[in-house]
Length: 221
Image (cartoon, rainbow, N blue to C red; front, side, top):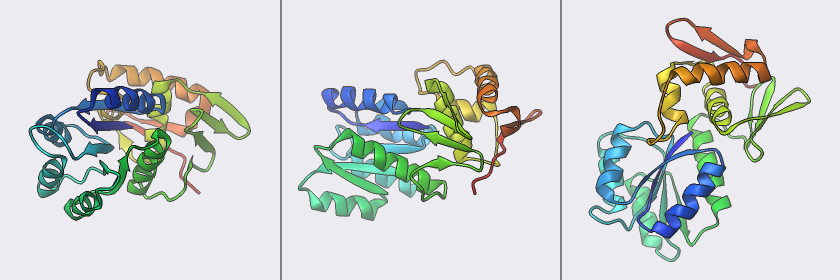
């Protein structure tokens, strides 16, 4: 899954970025409102973490511009702990969730996951299908009673495919949700990671649609 972190505090960015990447997210960073608005309109993010106190353009103005153009990307707003009015304004403008500063990174990660689950119509705190379970904390996939450790890219790819089970996903589409902006997005590498995943979860789980892409073929119970 790919996130946009919008925050102008360098120390906070460094800490949060490292923790989000460790948790299995591809993350882009914007440090002002102008860049944030542009990235949110041009890149297919799965969620945005948006601070309101930004230079050049406030987070609230950015969010308002996105929603005004029909951009429904899920947004978690960061506010000062006691600024209740910022939370109210954020919800009125179209925020999906909020988190007060200072915060624990574990709570932010949990809220991001919950937001993404809801967007994909899931209420469970686990990503499970009929035959597989994905452990986000250990980045392992459990097939029956056997666990397989995944690399960072394998984990991001399988998580996205499991959340989009039954959909045809092109290589370019998968690349956009597996890699951050600074990564070299060679869509042909997706073939390599698909092959590695098939070795771990079985060839029948990921089907190839020639000329179109791939389908994860294991529906949830």
